[in-house]
Length: 477
Image (cartoon, rainbow, N blue to C red; front, top):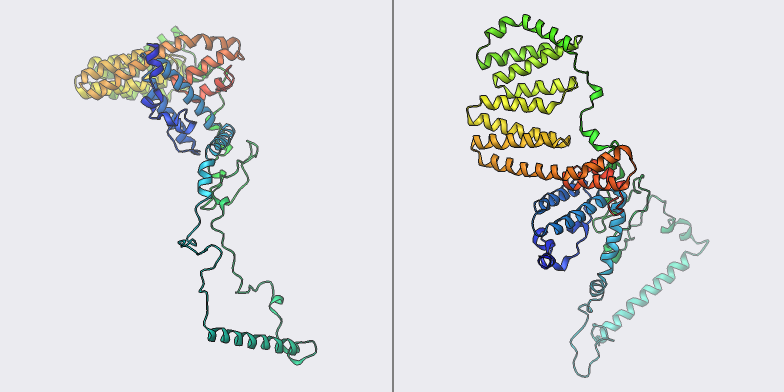
């Protein structure tokens, strides 16, 4: 089994990187163009690669899958951090330049151009120009005569132009005395379009990471480093501030909500609501009537701000009435507002709404709606690291998809259920690290374990990178 794992080329089989391109650089590993500057492109490519490899974490080559996941994670960390990206790009350019001397010489030393002529016995063509060897006698004579005429004219002009002569007094100023704004038309700028420096790689800027590089003027022949280097202002997007415990950020803050009123106050408020809405409760027989009444009571609860017990009972009554009507959308809306306003857990309330509406569902469209809502709630539970709730939502989504007889929805729910199971098992292992960080926020080993779980398993990079930066593995810091 070990021999099969060693002979299996995971780079080629899973990522399409042939042996001659191994080991790949960060850009080849992520399947993006060299020195890609768009951070969104880099992040998206890394996420796609990691999602692809997570599907191969089980089986005989699971160790190779984890190895590649670690490499992609390291590449993502390097390329999303502006300073690290500049350093890596500089090293990569040096490496590429060291591997290309032979190609450079082959380009720099071409064969002589077309001035070479076919050699014949007895002829030496290199030292002789291509002009005719002899010229006719009359042509030579004419040339000599024209030359003498020109020399004579120049001599006469110089004689007449000496100081004190009339011509010197009346002649215009020489061309060298033209005002600065005039440009002699005979001046032709030199042409040097074949300068080898145009093809040389642009220098790596040495500015500090918290300052933008000095502006340069890019030319079509020589792209500058500024076009390939992300500005430091993108840093907060990659590593936003986060609390020491990332779990606390994902869960609702109970201190910001009102406590649930005591039992006596709630009983009194329930009696009042029952008396006020007694006739409407009795008249609401059909689902649409119950739904309308639930919406009315919900609005009354939103408007009640000076009576906590009354507001709680109104919202809870609206939630139960919406469940009886089978109105899943309204029921979930009331659940969220109730949990946002009072210190109650939202996931059990939402699961109750799914179960109640599931019992009243009769059409495939109803089951599809329940399955879709369950998958959305599943994501919220994962974000809060509540994997018990996530497993319940996954089970509801799969059961509802099967009742809807929707193959695509069944496949999606099945895949999500597997993901939740994997996340739950990994979180059980990492949970000790999160608990340790509550008492020892500087523990590097726990930060590494927490960061690996958040980044490599959960895919929560903003929270995970904060932990990796404080972890014990310098290659991921």
